[in-house]
Length: 398
Image (cartoon, rainbow, N blue to C red):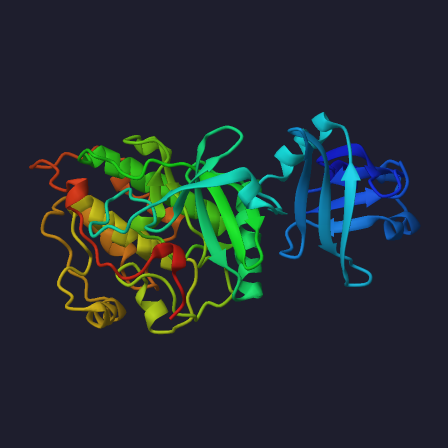
């Protein structure tokens, strides 16, 4: 057990000043009643210890400051033995607490969001959805202590099991970090909301994309999706709105965001959810589906990057778009002339039986062959215009 400990420090119960020992593991806190090494723990000691599950939506931590100096924390959690909600406050050395907080950031729910962040502005809804635009109604906040900008996403707690699923995925991704997935810096819980705090990202790219840049972007996105699938996660809402650049005009900083519709592989894989125009037909047809639905969504993004056009450009209204998507009546742009590009694209948006995994896509010759095309790239980022179906950060199953 000792090898699984991430961090340990001495704390004291704020109520009676009794010394305790804190042990941080990947998914839990253990606060023992005896100042004893957890490697020698026995059943009796384990029963007398407080075991706090960090990933539960019932666990929250409030940090206690005195004149901007970190003094302790209050933890609220559900007791494993009584199943009752309990709260207790611990004090510790400031430096140790700072280390503990850094390790817990993005791995447990905090409270008192408004004490640390101040509202700056909301991102206005736009008609033109650009290649690297951020979700439409995510808010911009300022961290009061440092003055740094942060992006903040609010999620209503309407379904606790769904919220817990998203938290499990976010917390796991934070502990299994990957370069093309945007990390959640902190997660807060309000009375009826979960609040995700992320690094501030530049929301657009103001230059045309060259073919080698498109190749790089798709490689990074496919590697990110491969990482998700390896962890047993399906995103289910990959689209241009959910792809951002962490640094303006820097495609190397491309990130996948928003796991509000993500699920573990095998869970709820007949539910219709996502964004029309990016959804695999098997989702709309309410067939059983797997992680390959993400490949279809990336195929739709790939088509837009190559041509500047939608995969379903001639829909009349939302219902018509859904019907075309359901029947997979795609219209590949005539601008996509390169054989390797078209071949990979058609595989990605093809029937689920023949659709390749992220790993197989990455082995396609499109990524190894130097692409030379007979005309300039015509897809200007700001010419991309996509249907205003719904706010991607408030996507719901339908």
